Image (cartoon, rainbow, N blue to C red; front, side, top):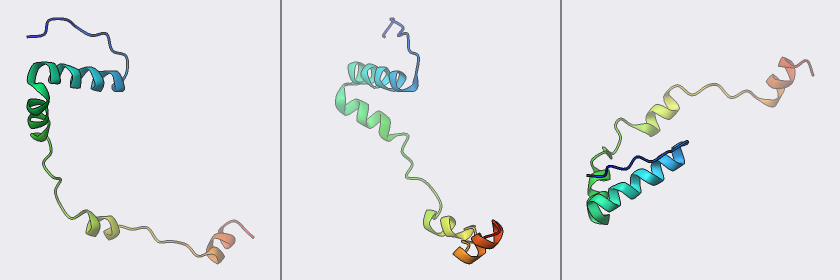
Length: 69
């Protein structure tokens, strides 16, 4: 068990130190296997959902009218 605490001030340091601790404790292969547990491959249909609620795109003429040009 690692008993030293690291003084971290930002997310990049936390990630770097966390990965370093994992590699030290589990080795490269163990670290990869550990991290793979959190990759669920997502869910749903991103492509369909992306365009499902797509906002209307205005034409150049409509934009000019909005701004009084």
